Image 1: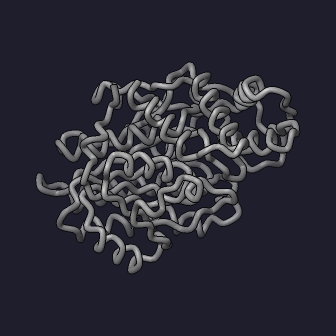
Image 2: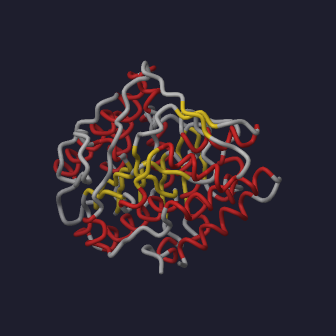
Length: 353
């Protein structure tokens, strides 16, 4: 059974930032299918190709192309939508890009959070707000055990640190403006490395695998021994919708939540690529570590006990199934099949498990 009720969202007015991105497009497809009245606010898709254009959703929602840093533009779209539920996913999400342009990264990830929270603060009708951050918000001590929600927040690189700041902004707004019983319920959700069909971002391992497979080339891996908590995109997206729903229904559920896979899904990058190659067929990986590459954590995983205890949540698709779904999705796309149909089929398989 699903951990969130799609029927809950029927007719609900939802405002989603970052709707043109990878996770945002999957969430939009789910919400549209559930009958939500959806408004998205985001920059134009950042990749070519892009999932948003493939997913056949733009004419089924109100899609506003705008910059989260532009408060006046954001507030105009927000006020017109007059939402009950707000999910904030707009971000500069790439670690290496944050080294290239830290000012833009902080401006987007920190002030963007301030701006959307200002819209919520000035609204009379918002009942549920969720800020989506990352597992990288934690001060990484390279522990073998998972980080819990009360561990110190202190990301290393500009991306991770800016998301730590986004968390702290949310904590401050919650304490300063949303503490009364009639105030919106405020939560954050910290997810691990998300993979799935339709991710075309630069500098991510599965998109790199897909690009190599399309060209019939070997897959270059720069950090084969880095361990990451990989999960299918539908795992966190449906968990976000669950949190937003449950705190809408009862403010006692407002909190900070890790959304990570079980230990069996914490695998090295090299093993992940080998799994992709095995399921795809006809390609292999080549290790090419770069000693001069910018720092990235070599090991980090989450303890999702709070989410499990609070909601009875558990991961649905483990890494082998996840990789099968990724290969399935991309082979449909490669062959000219229907992207909306494969998305809907995988969504249905996931939420009716």
